Image 1 (tube, rainbow, N blue to C red):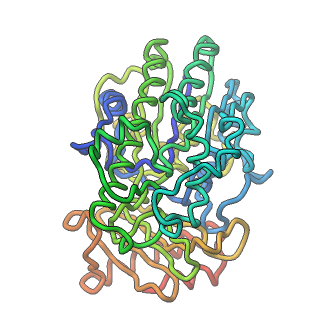
Image 2 (tube, rainbow, N blue to C red):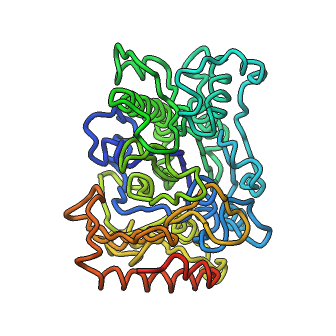
Length: 450
């Protein structure tokens, strides 16, 4: 069996038609979902970009001990294990954050789609659409991204298009291999939300006003209502752009009949607030303002199509990115005695329809304790998900909150006063988990008050 993983950045699960969205065009991914298993309780564990991928590549949940850092020599990756099992491995990506962290080093082929040459010269030509202070990091990322897009002439110049076309070309060259593992990684839909105009105009025709496309990673009080809607429309346009080019790769897989002998996975690393909970952005950029990770950010789209599957399936099994590695190793026929130590659990029983249960709890956070990879300006609360309950706890300044998904899917009604016993049991599970993962005592105690 081959493995093809398509990982997208900042794609919210609730912006896909296959997850119930009626307004945003995602025909390519929706068509894929019609013959795939849709996971309705997939959650990020280690947050954000690189920590999530570290979980997926190592089969472990790493946020209790470290944050955003390069892979360590002691960490065994799924790539290494599959190579030892006779797989040819390839990494096709435009996600620059992954270059210095070592993810590509284990692959036999590492194809990074470079930004266009000479883009730095365009920085002085970038026009600011909104006040710089209304954008994350004072607009530095906006200027970088717009300087690059000034060199785009056609839709095929956008990074997601280039990446999916490169992955398709790789399949043309390699589809006859006996066994292969291909990881395709695109930084789309990460801001700047600057899709080609025909996508943006579909959702926001005849717009007049400040043209927000790069969120402030702060609170919504800086936006007028129409400006916030413009930000949402620009995000929707990015979703449709990304869907169109993911569909290109999926069509290539279908044309080559690779669905007959490959597991194909589509997932995202996290979502984004676009006005919910009075926030825009995925995390805080203020060291004293720890943000909660609600479902708009922490819940993931996850679709898996197995060989021979010809119908849409769903599961409510609670899963996380760390479960991907043991799943692939089991399907590859690697003996469990040869697996490295992992926290993740194989999802094969869920895919086979043998059960609808997996993890009892999932714990989501960005590392906020002492140790490597801590980002001082990115403090995070900790989210404990145990359907139907969600517990959010944080540092000393944060009052713990408890939500019930069945009656409050938007996570706006704090029920901890009514159900303290539920919160206490979830707190105990968090303490046990953090300790089992090697978190320092002070870190545990600082985040597990009820």
